[in-house]
Image 1 (cartoon, helix red, strand yellow):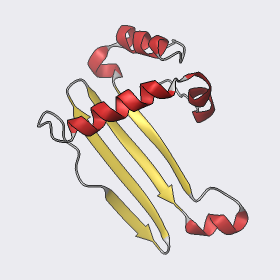
Image 2 (cartoon, helix red, strand yellow):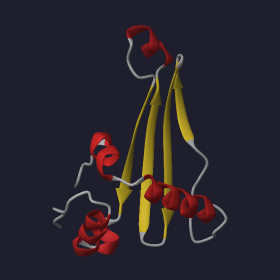
Image 3 (tube, one colour):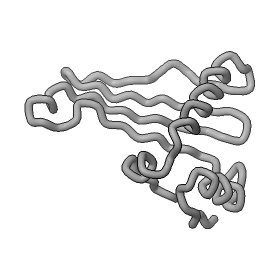
Image 4 (cartoon, rainbow, N blue to C red):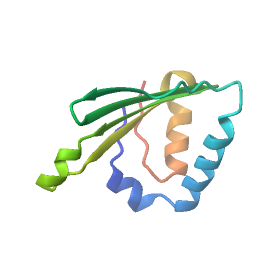
Length: 111
């Protein structure tokens, strides 16, 4: 597994890449080859935990988001999240390394 920090992404990623990715993601909403169910969530008092999976040809991802409004009082982030991108078993390490290299994220994926 390769863990890429937000700081690293902000440092090396061209904003144009993310615009292109978001455009493709939004266009895939109407594509029947992709399945993105409604957001699942659990409310705990004033806190909410979200689980947002999506799957399509050669890729799957899950976004996990926690919303803790009470964190504002202690100066902590109210919204925290992570995205898990599952392309390893579908593409293999060679393609994953190539894509990471294209995005300037480094390469060290091994299966």
